[in-house]
Length: 334
Image (cartoon, rainbow, N blue to C red; front, side, top):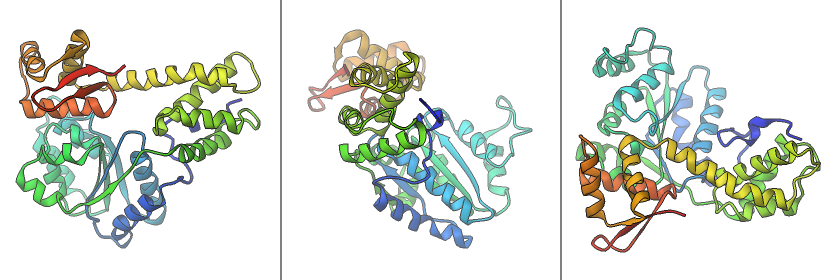
């Protein structure tokens, strides 16, 4: 039934992309100087999760690597590699410069100098979840490396720019911004049809069933692909011949729960504390939330940083926030 399991994974980069022509053309034009040996201006891809930001960035870099003989590239998920050291280590790993680096003893400045002093081969760095960087000044340092081009990805540009200082803001304010909207059902239908064609045996699933999946994905391609993957696995394990509406109905909550758990597993220590407090209380006001959070950690972040953390939890549908600043109530998303 499943002919290519890779196609059913959210991180799979398709051979062609659907319903993102404007975004592809825009980012392609921004990156075009690289084909002539020059650094491109930074680009910021922003919009809701599951809207294709990461997929488009990686797709276009792959296209660039086919067009440019010499091109270094690295993808960094700043939610996972959120410290200055980890991000620089990942970037150096992209050019095989980490052999003698020790995580406990090598100074962070050494990593930056090594990255700066590498040859002039164009280097494209995709910094996903860039608003999760603990030290945003790293973006300023990376901006000053002549041969390095940054593609920044975030859910909300405000969440990024409100957390940086004036020096960095002046550099990034004019970066090319590309907004991604949530997919419409018809767009998700086309994406799913491609995945079915590439990853499943013929006649395994009908158009009505694919439309059913698209209608229940909430505009999120990750959810849509997750539902398809879950339904296909259930059908295969039951030794049935086709994916039925019943198997899809069962797969919908399972896929959403899987994505939710993956998101929870990626939370930083401080985000996890905040999430746990909200979960324990059911609903809680900002001041009480902050006070409880501060009591549970030896190194509490500022209220401004905590608001950024909470905004991130909202973007990934882990919590909801109702009311204005004074009367706001945080609740766990059901």
